[in-house]
Length: 587
Image (cartoon, rainbow, N blue to C red; front, side):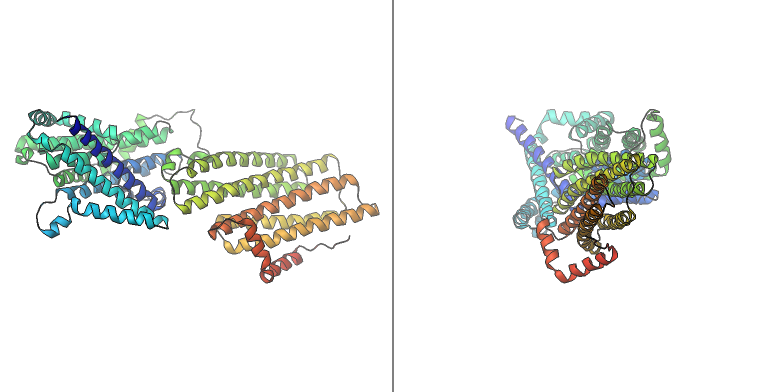
Protein backbone atom coordinates (compact mmCIF):
# COMPACT_ATOMS: atom_id res chain seq x y z
CA UNK A 1 0.00 0.00 0.00
CA UNK A 2 1.51 3.37 -1.08
CA UNK A 3 0.54 7.01 -0.56
CA UNK A 4 -1.67 7.02 -3.66
CA UNK A 5 -3.63 4.02 -2.39
CA UNK A 6 -4.17 5.79 0.95
CA UNK A 7 -5.33 8.96 -0.83
CA UNK A 8 -7.70 6.92 -3.00
CA UNK A 9 -9.08 5.19 0.11
CA UNK A 10 -9.58 8.52 1.92
CA UNK A 11 -11.17 10.05 -1.18
CA UNK A 12 -13.58 7.13 -1.42
CA UNK A 13 -14.43 7.44 2.29
CA UNK A 14 -15.13 11.17 1.89
CA UNK A 15 -17.41 10.57 -1.10
CA UNK A 16 -19.14 7.73 0.73
CA UNK A 17 -19.83 9.82 3.87
CA UNK A 18 -20.85 12.88 1.84
CA UNK A 19 -23.24 10.84 -0.30
CA UNK A 20 -24.82 9.29 2.78
CA UNK A 21 -25.21 12.69 4.44
CA UNK A 22 -26.66 14.25 1.26
CA UNK A 23 -29.14 11.40 0.82
CA UNK A 24 -30.22 11.44 4.49
CA UNK A 25 -30.76 15.21 4.57
CA UNK A 26 -32.83 15.09 1.37
CA UNK A 27 -34.95 12.26 2.74
CA UNK A 28 -35.65 14.31 5.86
CA UNK A 29 -36.63 17.37 3.81
CA UNK A 30 -38.84 15.25 1.58
CA UNK A 31 -40.65 14.01 4.70
CA UNK A 32 -41.39 17.67 5.49
CA UNK A 33 -41.41 17.33 9.28
CA UNK A 34 -44.22 14.76 9.24
CA UNK A 35 -42.05 11.94 10.58
CA UNK A 36 -40.85 14.08 13.47
CA UNK A 37 -44.42 15.04 14.35
CA UNK A 38 -45.50 11.39 14.23
CA UNK A 39 -42.64 10.43 16.53
CA UNK A 40 -43.61 13.15 18.96
CA UNK A 41 -47.28 12.11 19.17
CA UNK A 42 -47.98 8.46 18.34
CA UNK A 43 -46.23 6.42 21.01
CA UNK A 44 -49.15 5.02 22.96
CA UNK A 45 -47.79 1.47 23.28
CA UNK A 46 -44.43 -0.27 23.26
CA UNK A 47 -45.01 -1.92 19.88
CA UNK A 48 -46.31 1.27 18.29
CA UNK A 49 -43.17 3.04 19.48
CA UNK A 50 -41.00 0.25 18.10
CA UNK A 51 -42.69 0.36 14.67
CA UNK A 52 -42.52 4.15 14.53
CA UNK A 53 -38.81 4.12 15.35
CA UNK A 54 -38.24 1.45 12.70
CA UNK A 55 -40.19 3.27 9.97
CA UNK A 56 -38.81 6.74 10.65
CA UNK A 57 -35.21 5.49 10.77
CA UNK A 58 -35.69 3.36 7.64
CA UNK A 59 -36.89 6.49 5.82
CA UNK A 60 -34.18 8.91 6.99
CA UNK A 61 -31.57 6.10 7.16
CA UNK A 62 -29.95 7.21 10.39
CA UNK A 63 -30.60 5.86 13.87
CA UNK A 64 -28.34 8.65 15.20
CA UNK A 65 -30.67 11.28 13.68
CA UNK A 66 -33.69 9.57 15.24
CA UNK A 67 -32.13 9.39 18.70
CA UNK A 68 -30.99 13.02 18.49
CA UNK A 69 -34.64 13.91 17.69
CA UNK A 70 -35.70 12.02 20.80
CA UNK A 71 -33.12 13.82 22.94
CA UNK A 72 -34.55 17.11 21.66
CA UNK A 73 -38.17 16.03 22.24
CA UNK A 74 -37.48 15.00 25.83
CA UNK A 75 -35.35 18.07 26.51
CA UNK A 76 -38.23 20.32 25.41
CA UNK A 77 -40.90 18.36 27.27
CA UNK A 78 -42.65 17.08 24.14
CA UNK A 79 -42.04 13.46 25.14
CA UNK A 80 -41.27 11.50 28.31
CA UNK A 81 -38.26 9.23 28.80
CA UNK A 82 -40.44 6.10 28.89
CA UNK A 83 -41.92 6.87 25.45
CA UNK A 84 -38.51 6.95 23.79
CA UNK A 85 -37.15 3.52 24.77
CA UNK A 86 -39.19 1.37 22.38
CA UNK A 87 -38.59 3.96 19.61
CA UNK A 88 -34.83 3.65 20.14
CA UNK A 89 -35.11 -0.13 19.74
CA UNK A 90 -37.13 0.32 16.55
CA UNK A 91 -34.52 2.76 15.26
CA UNK A 92 -31.81 0.15 15.83
CA UNK A 93 -33.60 -2.23 13.47
CA UNK A 94 -34.56 0.50 10.97
CA UNK A 95 -30.95 1.57 10.47
CA UNK A 96 -30.11 -1.83 8.91
CA UNK A 97 -31.93 -0.80 5.71
CA UNK A 98 -28.84 1.10 4.55
CA UNK A 99 -26.61 -1.98 4.78
CA UNK A 100 -29.05 -3.86 2.52
CA UNK A 101 -28.94 -1.08 -0.07
CA UNK A 102 -25.15 -1.18 0.00
CA UNK A 103 -25.10 -4.96 -0.27
CA UNK A 104 -26.24 -4.65 -3.91
CA UNK A 105 -22.56 -4.05 -4.67
CA UNK A 106 -21.99 -7.76 -3.95
CA UNK A 107 -24.35 -9.02 -6.67
CA UNK A 108 -22.57 -11.68 -8.73
CA UNK A 109 -23.30 -12.94 -12.23
CA UNK A 110 -22.73 -12.21 -15.91
CA UNK A 111 -26.29 -12.30 -17.24
CA UNK A 112 -27.52 -8.97 -18.63
CA UNK A 113 -30.40 -8.72 -16.15
CA UNK A 114 -28.09 -9.40 -13.21
CA UNK A 115 -25.56 -6.85 -14.50
CA UNK A 116 -28.29 -4.20 -14.56
CA UNK A 117 -28.75 -4.63 -10.80
CA UNK A 118 -25.04 -4.09 -10.11
CA UNK A 119 -24.19 -0.61 -8.75
CA UNK A 120 -21.66 0.08 -11.48
CA UNK A 121 -24.54 -0.32 -13.97
CA UNK A 122 -27.45 1.50 -12.33
CA UNK A 123 -25.51 4.14 -10.30
CA UNK A 124 -24.50 6.23 -13.37
CA UNK A 125 -28.11 6.07 -14.57
CA UNK A 126 -29.37 7.32 -11.18
CA UNK A 127 -26.76 10.09 -11.21
CA UNK A 128 -27.86 11.29 -14.67
CA UNK A 129 -31.56 11.12 -13.78
CA UNK A 130 -30.88 12.98 -10.52
CA UNK A 131 -28.85 15.67 -12.28
CA UNK A 132 -31.50 16.25 -14.99
CA UNK A 133 -34.25 16.38 -12.34
CA UNK A 134 -32.23 18.81 -10.24
CA UNK A 135 -31.65 21.14 -13.18
CA UNK A 136 -35.30 21.13 -14.27
CA UNK A 137 -37.04 20.86 -10.86
CA UNK A 138 -39.47 23.68 -10.08
CA UNK A 139 -40.76 22.38 -6.76
CA UNK A 140 -39.08 21.17 -3.57
CA UNK A 141 -40.40 17.62 -3.85
CA UNK A 142 -38.70 16.97 -7.19
CA UNK A 143 -35.54 18.77 -6.08
CA UNK A 144 -35.27 16.67 -2.91
CA UNK A 145 -35.94 13.48 -4.89
CA UNK A 146 -33.18 14.40 -7.34
CA UNK A 147 -30.75 15.06 -4.48
CA UNK A 148 -31.55 11.64 -2.99
CA UNK A 149 -30.62 10.00 -6.31
CA UNK A 150 -27.42 12.04 -6.61
CA UNK A 151 -26.52 11.34 -2.97
CA UNK A 152 -27.00 7.59 -3.47
CA UNK A 153 -24.87 7.67 -6.62
CA UNK A 154 -22.05 9.53 -4.83
CA UNK A 155 -22.28 7.07 -1.94
CA UNK A 156 -21.95 4.06 -4.27
CA UNK A 157 -19.09 5.67 -6.23
CA UNK A 158 -17.31 6.26 -2.93
CA UNK A 159 -17.85 2.66 -1.89
CA UNK A 160 -16.49 1.40 -5.21
CA UNK A 161 -13.49 3.72 -4.88
CA UNK A 162 -12.70 2.34 -1.40
CA UNK A 163 -13.03 -1.26 -2.64
CA UNK A 164 -10.66 -0.58 -5.53
CA UNK A 165 -8.15 1.14 -3.24
CA UNK A 166 -7.87 -1.83 -0.85
CA UNK A 167 -8.03 -4.55 -3.49
CA UNK A 168 -4.27 -5.15 -3.25
CA UNK A 169 -4.49 -5.77 0.51
CA UNK A 170 -5.98 -9.24 0.10
CA UNK A 171 -2.48 -10.64 -0.49
CA UNK A 172 -0.80 -8.41 2.11
CA UNK A 173 0.40 -10.49 5.07
CA UNK A 174 0.48 -7.51 7.47
CA UNK A 175 -3.15 -6.69 6.73
CA UNK A 176 -4.10 -10.38 7.09
CA UNK A 177 -2.42 -10.48 10.52
CA UNK A 178 -4.31 -7.32 11.50
CA UNK A 179 -7.62 -8.93 10.59
CA UNK A 180 -6.73 -11.99 12.66
CA UNK A 181 -6.08 -9.68 15.64
CA UNK A 182 -9.57 -8.21 15.20
CA UNK A 183 -10.96 -11.74 15.35
CA UNK A 184 -10.52 -11.44 19.11
CA UNK A 185 -14.06 -10.42 20.15
CA UNK A 186 -12.89 -7.75 22.59
CA UNK A 187 -10.44 -6.18 20.12
CA UNK A 188 -12.99 -6.30 17.30
CA UNK A 189 -15.66 -4.64 19.44
CA UNK A 190 -13.24 -1.90 20.54
CA UNK A 191 -12.14 -1.17 16.95
CA UNK A 192 -15.75 -1.11 15.68
CA UNK A 193 -16.78 1.17 18.54
CA UNK A 194 -13.93 3.65 18.06
CA UNK A 195 -14.26 3.88 14.27
CA UNK A 196 -18.04 4.40 14.43
CA UNK A 197 -17.68 6.96 17.23
CA UNK A 198 -15.27 8.94 15.02
CA UNK A 199 -17.52 9.07 11.93
CA UNK A 200 -20.72 9.09 14.09
CA UNK A 201 -22.76 6.73 11.93
CA UNK A 202 -23.16 2.97 12.25
CA UNK A 203 -24.67 2.84 8.74
CA UNK A 204 -21.55 4.47 7.28
CA UNK A 205 -19.28 2.31 9.43
CA UNK A 206 -20.99 -0.88 8.29
CA UNK A 207 -20.83 0.42 4.72
CA UNK A 208 -17.05 0.85 4.99
CA UNK A 209 -16.78 -2.73 6.28
CA UNK A 210 -18.89 -3.90 3.33
CA UNK A 211 -16.63 -1.99 0.93
CA UNK A 212 -13.57 -3.72 2.42
CA UNK A 213 -15.30 -7.09 2.11
CA UNK A 214 -15.70 -6.61 -1.66
CA UNK A 215 -11.94 -6.63 -2.24
CA UNK A 216 -10.46 -8.31 0.84
CA UNK A 217 -11.15 -11.61 2.54
CA UNK A 218 -12.79 -10.57 5.80
CA UNK A 219 -13.82 -13.67 7.79
CA UNK A 220 -16.91 -13.84 9.96
CA UNK A 221 -14.63 -14.07 13.00
CA UNK A 222 -13.52 -10.49 12.28
CA UNK A 223 -16.76 -9.07 10.86
CA UNK A 224 -19.04 -10.12 13.74
CA UNK A 225 -17.18 -8.42 16.66
CA UNK A 226 -16.53 -5.30 14.55
CA UNK A 227 -20.25 -5.07 13.73
CA UNK A 228 -21.10 -5.46 17.41
CA UNK A 229 -18.70 -2.62 18.24
CA UNK A 230 -20.17 -0.45 15.49
CA UNK A 231 -23.55 -0.68 17.18
CA UNK A 232 -22.07 0.66 20.42
CA UNK A 233 -20.10 3.43 18.68
CA UNK A 234 -23.20 4.97 17.11
CA UNK A 235 -24.43 6.05 20.58
CA UNK A 236 -21.79 8.79 20.68
CA UNK A 237 -24.04 11.14 18.64
CA UNK A 238 -26.98 11.29 21.11
CA UNK A 239 -24.49 11.48 24.02
CA UNK A 240 -22.82 14.55 22.48
CA UNK A 241 -26.25 16.03 21.69
CA UNK A 242 -27.41 15.61 25.30
CA UNK A 243 -24.39 17.28 26.92
CA UNK A 244 -26.06 20.68 26.90
CA UNK A 245 -29.52 19.27 27.66
CA UNK A 246 -31.42 18.77 30.88
CA UNK A 247 -31.53 15.68 33.10
CA UNK A 248 -34.22 13.92 31.05
CA UNK A 249 -32.37 14.36 27.74
CA UNK A 250 -29.17 12.96 29.30
CA UNK A 251 -31.18 9.94 30.44
CA UNK A 252 -32.32 9.34 26.85
CA UNK A 253 -28.70 9.35 25.68
CA UNK A 254 -27.67 6.89 28.39
CA UNK A 255 -30.67 4.71 27.55
CA UNK A 256 -29.34 4.48 23.96
CA UNK A 257 -25.94 3.46 25.32
CA UNK A 258 -27.37 0.88 27.74
CA UNK A 259 -29.60 -0.70 25.09
CA UNK A 260 -26.65 -1.15 22.74
CA UNK A 261 -24.16 -2.27 25.39
CA UNK A 262 -26.47 -4.74 27.09
CA UNK A 263 -27.62 -5.99 23.68
CA UNK A 264 -24.01 -6.57 22.63
CA UNK A 265 -23.16 -8.30 25.92
CA UNK A 266 -26.26 -10.53 25.71
CA UNK A 267 -25.87 -11.50 22.02
CA UNK A 268 -22.09 -11.77 22.28
CA UNK A 269 -22.33 -13.98 25.38
CA UNK A 270 -24.91 -16.33 23.83
CA UNK A 271 -23.17 -16.51 20.44
CA UNK A 272 -19.63 -17.13 21.68
CA UNK A 273 -20.82 -19.60 24.31
CA UNK A 274 -22.51 -21.62 21.57
CA UNK A 275 -19.43 -21.20 19.37
CA UNK A 276 -17.20 -22.62 22.10
CA UNK A 277 -19.56 -25.60 22.59
CA UNK A 278 -20.52 -26.32 18.97
CA UNK A 279 -17.81 -24.61 16.93
CA UNK A 280 -19.38 -22.69 14.04
CA UNK A 281 -17.53 -23.68 10.86
CA UNK A 282 -18.58 -20.54 8.99
CA UNK A 283 -16.45 -18.33 11.32
CA UNK A 284 -13.36 -18.86 9.13
CA UNK A 285 -15.25 -18.27 5.89
CA UNK A 286 -15.35 -14.97 3.97
CA UNK A 287 -18.15 -12.57 4.92
CA UNK A 288 -19.59 -10.87 1.83
CA UNK A 289 -21.37 -7.49 1.81
CA UNK A 290 -24.70 -9.34 1.92
CA UNK A 291 -23.48 -11.48 4.84
CA UNK A 292 -22.46 -8.35 6.74
CA UNK A 293 -25.94 -6.87 6.18
CA UNK A 294 -27.47 -10.13 7.48
CA UNK A 295 -25.28 -10.13 10.62
CA UNK A 296 -26.02 -6.44 11.26
CA UNK A 297 -29.78 -7.05 10.91
CA UNK A 298 -29.87 -10.27 12.95
CA UNK A 299 -27.99 -8.65 15.83
CA UNK A 300 -30.44 -5.75 16.04
CA UNK A 301 -33.50 -8.01 15.71
CA UNK A 302 -32.31 -10.52 18.31
CA UNK A 303 -31.19 -7.86 20.79
CA UNK A 304 -34.56 -6.09 20.39
CA UNK A 305 -36.49 -9.33 20.99
CA UNK A 306 -34.45 -9.92 24.13
CA UNK A 307 -34.62 -6.35 25.48
CA UNK A 308 -38.05 -4.99 24.41
CA UNK A 309 -39.90 -6.58 27.38
CA UNK A 310 -37.55 -4.72 29.75
CA UNK A 311 -38.24 -1.14 28.63
CA UNK A 312 -39.29 -0.07 32.14
CA UNK A 313 -36.05 -1.45 33.59
CA UNK A 314 -34.00 0.62 31.15
CA UNK A 315 -35.95 3.69 32.26
CA UNK A 316 -35.17 2.95 35.92
CA UNK A 317 -31.51 2.30 35.11
CA UNK A 318 -31.21 5.66 33.30
CA UNK A 319 -32.94 7.46 36.19
CA UNK A 320 -30.53 5.87 38.69
CA UNK A 321 -27.54 6.80 36.53
CA UNK A 322 -28.53 10.44 36.03
CA UNK A 323 -29.97 11.82 39.25
CA UNK A 324 -32.39 14.74 39.16
CA UNK A 325 -30.98 18.10 40.13
CA UNK A 326 -33.19 19.70 42.73
CA UNK A 327 -32.14 23.14 41.56
CA UNK A 328 -33.00 22.38 37.94
CA UNK A 329 -35.60 24.89 36.77
CA UNK A 330 -38.91 23.76 35.38
CA UNK A 331 -39.27 23.80 31.61
CA UNK A 332 -40.61 27.04 30.30
CA UNK A 333 -42.62 27.74 27.18
CA UNK A 334 -39.44 28.16 25.15
CA UNK A 335 -37.88 24.77 25.86
CA UNK A 336 -39.27 23.61 22.48
CA UNK A 337 -36.88 26.05 20.76
CA UNK A 338 -34.12 23.47 20.91
CA UNK A 339 -31.14 23.90 18.57
CA UNK A 340 -31.27 20.15 17.88
CA UNK A 341 -34.48 20.75 15.93
CA UNK A 342 -32.64 23.05 13.51
CA UNK A 343 -31.57 19.86 11.75
CA UNK A 344 -35.31 19.27 11.18
CA UNK A 345 -36.51 22.68 9.90
CA UNK A 346 -40.12 21.60 9.26
CA UNK A 347 -40.54 20.41 12.83
CA UNK A 348 -38.78 23.49 14.21
CA UNK A 349 -41.17 25.72 12.23
CA UNK A 350 -44.16 23.86 13.72
CA UNK A 351 -42.86 24.52 17.24
CA UNK A 352 -42.48 28.23 16.42
CA UNK A 353 -46.03 28.34 15.05
CA UNK A 354 -47.34 26.99 18.35
CA UNK A 355 -45.47 29.69 20.28
CA UNK A 356 -46.69 32.46 17.97
CA UNK A 357 -50.26 31.19 18.45
CA UNK A 358 -49.77 31.33 22.24
CA UNK A 359 -48.32 34.81 21.86
CA UNK A 360 -51.40 35.95 19.91
CA UNK A 361 -53.73 34.57 22.59
CA UNK A 362 -51.80 36.44 25.28
CA UNK A 363 -52.12 39.67 23.24
CA UNK A 364 -55.91 39.22 23.08
CA UNK A 365 -56.00 38.63 26.84
CA UNK A 366 -53.90 41.76 27.45
CA UNK A 367 -56.23 43.88 25.31
CA UNK A 368 -59.39 42.60 26.99
CA UNK A 369 -57.98 43.16 30.48
CA UNK A 370 -56.83 46.66 29.48
CA UNK A 371 -60.31 47.62 28.21
CA UNK A 372 -61.84 46.30 31.44
CA UNK A 373 -59.84 48.97 33.25
CA UNK A 374 -61.62 51.65 31.23
CA UNK A 375 -64.87 50.66 32.89
CA UNK A 376 -63.55 49.98 36.38
CA UNK A 377 -59.91 50.45 37.33
CA UNK A 378 -58.23 47.68 39.34
CA UNK A 379 -54.52 47.90 40.18
CA UNK A 380 -54.16 44.08 40.19
CA UNK A 381 -55.51 43.83 36.63
CA UNK A 382 -53.31 46.78 35.61
CA UNK A 383 -50.26 44.86 36.86
CA UNK A 384 -51.44 41.75 35.00
CA UNK A 385 -51.53 43.71 31.73
CA UNK A 386 -47.94 44.81 32.34
CA UNK A 387 -46.88 41.22 33.03
CA UNK A 388 -48.61 39.99 29.87
CA UNK A 389 -46.88 42.66 27.80
CA UNK A 390 -43.49 41.66 29.29
CA UNK A 391 -44.27 38.04 28.54
CA UNK A 392 -44.99 38.87 24.89
CA UNK A 393 -41.71 40.79 24.65
CA UNK A 394 -39.93 37.62 25.79
CA UNK A 395 -41.90 35.57 23.25
CA UNK A 396 -40.90 37.97 20.50
CA UNK A 397 -37.22 37.92 21.45
CA UNK A 398 -36.90 34.13 21.82
CA UNK A 399 -39.11 33.10 18.90
CA UNK A 400 -37.85 35.62 16.35
CA UNK A 401 -34.22 34.75 17.20
CA UNK A 402 -34.99 31.07 16.69
CA UNK A 403 -36.81 31.76 13.42
CA UNK A 404 -33.76 33.62 12.14
CA UNK A 405 -31.69 30.51 12.92
CA UNK A 406 -34.21 28.35 11.03
CA UNK A 407 -34.13 30.77 8.09
CA UNK A 408 -30.42 30.05 7.65
CA UNK A 409 -31.09 26.29 7.47
CA UNK A 410 -31.70 24.37 4.26
CA UNK A 411 -35.49 24.15 4.15
CA UNK A 412 -38.35 23.82 1.69
CA UNK A 413 -39.99 26.83 0.02
CA UNK A 414 -43.19 26.08 1.98
CA UNK A 415 -41.35 26.29 5.30
CA UNK A 416 -39.57 29.42 4.11
CA UNK A 417 -42.94 31.10 3.47
CA UNK A 418 -44.19 30.11 6.92
CA UNK A 419 -41.05 31.54 8.54
CA UNK A 420 -41.61 34.81 6.63
CA UNK A 421 -45.25 34.90 7.77
CA UNK A 422 -44.36 34.24 11.41
CA UNK A 423 -41.59 36.86 11.48
CA UNK A 424 -44.04 39.47 10.15
CA UNK A 425 -46.82 38.43 12.52
CA UNK A 426 -44.59 38.39 15.61
CA UNK A 427 -43.83 42.08 15.19
CA UNK A 428 -47.51 42.95 14.79
CA UNK A 429 -48.55 40.87 17.82
CA UNK A 430 -45.86 42.51 19.96
CA UNK A 431 -47.07 45.96 18.92
CA UNK A 432 -50.66 44.99 19.78
CA UNK A 433 -49.53 44.16 23.31
CA UNK A 434 -47.70 47.51 23.51
CA UNK A 435 -50.90 49.33 22.58
CA UNK A 436 -52.85 47.23 25.10
CA UNK A 437 -50.44 48.43 27.79
CA UNK A 438 -50.88 52.01 26.54
CA UNK A 439 -54.67 51.61 26.93
CA UNK A 440 -54.15 50.30 30.48
CA UNK A 441 -51.94 53.33 31.26
CA UNK A 442 -54.61 55.64 29.81
CA UNK A 443 -57.17 53.99 32.10
CA UNK A 444 -54.82 54.57 35.05
CA UNK A 445 -54.43 58.23 34.07
CA UNK A 446 -58.23 58.60 33.95
CA UNK A 447 -58.48 56.95 37.39
CA UNK A 448 -55.64 58.95 38.97
CA UNK A 449 -56.89 62.30 37.62
CA UNK A 450 -60.51 61.39 38.34
CA UNK A 451 -61.45 62.24 34.76
CA UNK A 452 -65.02 61.48 33.69
CA UNK A 453 -66.14 61.17 30.08
CA UNK A 454 -69.57 62.41 29.06
CA UNK A 455 -72.27 59.71 28.59
CA UNK A 456 -72.00 60.12 24.78
CA UNK A 457 -68.22 59.81 24.80
CA UNK A 458 -68.46 56.71 27.03
CA UNK A 459 -71.01 55.17 24.67
CA UNK A 460 -68.78 55.89 21.66
CA UNK A 461 -65.74 54.37 23.40
CA UNK A 462 -67.72 51.21 24.16
CA UNK A 463 -68.68 50.87 20.47
CA UNK A 464 -65.13 51.18 19.14
CA UNK A 465 -63.86 48.88 21.92
CA UNK A 466 -66.25 46.14 20.75
CA UNK A 467 -65.18 46.65 17.13
CA UNK A 468 -61.47 46.39 18.00
CA UNK A 469 -62.14 43.30 20.15
CA UNK A 470 -63.84 41.66 17.15
CA UNK A 471 -61.08 42.49 14.66
CA UNK A 472 -58.52 41.17 17.13
CA UNK A 473 -60.43 37.89 17.52
CA UNK A 474 -60.84 37.63 13.73
CA UNK A 475 -57.14 38.12 12.99
CA UNK A 476 -56.03 35.68 15.71
CA UNK A 477 -58.50 33.03 14.51
CA UNK A 478 -57.25 33.60 10.96
CA UNK A 479 -53.68 33.01 12.12
CA UNK A 480 -54.35 29.97 14.32
CA UNK A 481 -56.96 28.19 12.20
CA UNK A 482 -55.57 29.31 8.82
CA UNK A 483 -59.08 30.50 7.99
CA UNK A 484 -59.01 32.42 4.71
CA UNK A 485 -62.72 33.22 4.89
CA UNK A 486 -62.40 35.03 8.21
CA UNK A 487 -59.31 36.82 6.96
CA UNK A 488 -61.42 38.54 4.28
CA UNK A 489 -63.55 40.24 6.94
CA UNK A 490 -60.61 41.92 8.67
CA UNK A 491 -59.91 44.69 6.17
CA UNK A 492 -63.53 45.97 5.91
CA UNK A 493 -63.75 46.05 9.71
CA UNK A 494 -60.42 47.89 9.88
CA UNK A 495 -61.87 50.54 7.55
CA UNK A 496 -64.93 50.85 9.81
CA UNK A 497 -62.68 51.32 12.86
CA UNK A 498 -60.82 54.10 11.03
CA UNK A 499 -64.21 55.72 10.37
CA UNK A 500 -65.23 55.31 14.02
CA UNK A 501 -62.08 57.11 15.11
CA UNK A 502 -62.88 60.06 12.84
CA UNK A 503 -66.52 60.21 13.93
CA UNK A 504 -65.64 60.05 17.65
CA UNK A 505 -63.01 62.79 17.24
CA UNK A 506 -65.50 64.96 15.38
CA UNK A 507 -68.05 64.35 18.10
CA UNK A 508 -65.54 65.42 20.75
CA UNK A 509 -64.74 68.62 18.85
CA UNK A 510 -68.47 69.36 18.64
CA UNK A 511 -68.89 68.83 22.41
CA UNK A 512 -65.77 70.91 23.08
CA UNK A 513 -67.33 73.84 21.22
CA UNK A 514 -70.51 73.45 23.23
CA UNK A 515 -68.53 73.36 26.50
CA UNK A 516 -69.49 69.76 27.30
CA UNK A 517 -65.87 68.48 27.14
CA UNK A 518 -62.43 69.78 28.11
CA UNK A 519 -59.08 69.92 26.31
CA UNK A 520 -57.60 67.50 28.87
CA UNK A 521 -60.28 64.94 28.04
CA UNK A 522 -59.51 65.51 24.37
CA UNK A 523 -55.85 64.54 24.82
CA UNK A 524 -56.79 61.40 26.73
CA UNK A 525 -59.42 60.45 24.17
CA UNK A 526 -57.01 61.05 21.28
CA UNK A 527 -54.40 58.74 22.87
CA UNK A 528 -57.02 56.08 23.43
CA UNK A 529 -58.37 56.23 19.87
CA UNK A 530 -54.86 56.20 18.38
CA UNK A 531 -54.08 52.96 20.24
CA UNK A 532 -57.35 51.42 19.06
CA UNK A 533 -56.64 52.38 15.46
CA UNK A 534 -53.06 51.05 15.62
CA UNK A 535 -54.28 47.71 16.99
CA UNK A 536 -56.72 47.39 14.08
CA UNK A 537 -53.89 48.27 11.65
CA UNK A 538 -51.72 45.45 13.07
CA UNK A 539 -54.68 43.07 12.86
CA UNK A 540 -55.01 44.01 9.20
CA UNK A 541 -51.30 43.32 8.69
CA UNK A 542 -51.66 39.83 10.18
CA UNK A 543 -54.65 38.94 8.00
CA UNK A 544 -53.11 40.36 4.82
CA UNK A 545 -49.83 38.58 5.52
CA UNK A 546 -51.64 35.26 5.95
CA UNK A 547 -53.69 35.72 2.75
CA UNK A 548 -50.65 36.71 0.70
CA UNK A 549 -48.62 33.72 1.93
CA UNK A 550 -51.56 31.44 1.05
CA UNK A 551 -51.67 33.03 -2.43
CA UNK A 552 -47.92 32.41 -2.86
CA UNK A 553 -47.28 36.13 -2.94
CA UNK A 554 -46.24 38.87 -0.60
CA UNK A 555 -47.41 42.18 -2.03
CA UNK A 556 -49.41 43.78 0.78
CA UNK A 557 -50.22 47.06 -0.96
CA UNK A 558 -51.22 45.26 -4.15
CA UNK A 559 -53.56 43.00 -2.15
CA UNK A 560 -55.21 45.92 -0.33
CA UNK A 561 -55.81 47.70 -3.64
CA UNK A 562 -57.28 44.51 -5.07
CA UNK A 563 -59.61 44.05 -2.08
CA UNK A 564 -60.87 47.62 -2.21
CA UNK A 565 -61.23 47.43 -5.99
CA UNK A 566 -63.73 44.61 -5.56
CA UNK A 567 -66.37 47.12 -4.58
CA UNK A 568 -69.31 44.74 -4.40
CA UNK A 569 -67.93 42.17 -1.92
CA UNK A 570 -65.86 44.66 0.07
CA UNK A 571 -68.74 47.14 0.11
CA UNK A 572 -71.19 44.58 1.47
CA UNK A 573 -68.88 43.63 4.34
CA UNK A 574 -68.04 47.26 5.06
CA UNK A 575 -71.71 48.31 5.19
CA UNK A 576 -72.55 45.36 7.44
CA UNK A 577 -69.89 46.38 9.96
CA UNK A 578 -70.83 50.04 9.63
CA UNK A 579 -74.41 49.19 10.66
CA UNK A 580 -73.21 46.91 13.46
CA UNK A 581 -70.91 49.57 14.96
CA UNK A 582 -72.93 52.67 14.22
CA UNK A 583 -72.14 55.99 15.87
CA UNK A 584 -74.12 59.09 15.00
CA UNK A 585 -71.92 61.82 13.58
CA UNK A 586 -72.67 64.99 15.56
CA UNK A 587 -70.10 67.14 13.84
